[in-house]
Length: 67
Image (cartoon, rainbow, N blue to C red; front, side):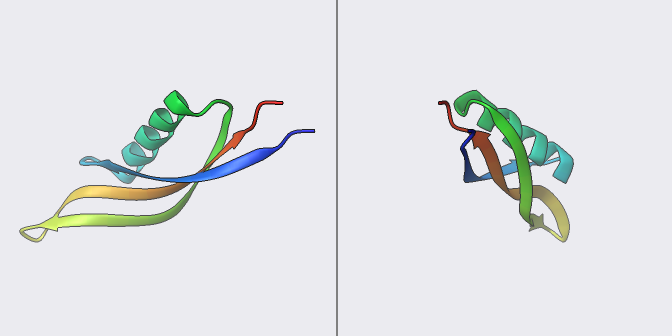
């Protein structure tokens, strides 16, 4: 029987939401084993001088616990 755990992380990118998600999953995979999925729970931006300068995503990352 498999048991999974969910952890929440925040990742950022200056280029796009997609890049922020990819960066977050990539970084989580360096620390967590058996990463299975990520749910984008929230998206925020940083605005400087009226322009979006950074995308931030809150991710719920699901990974399987080792037996």
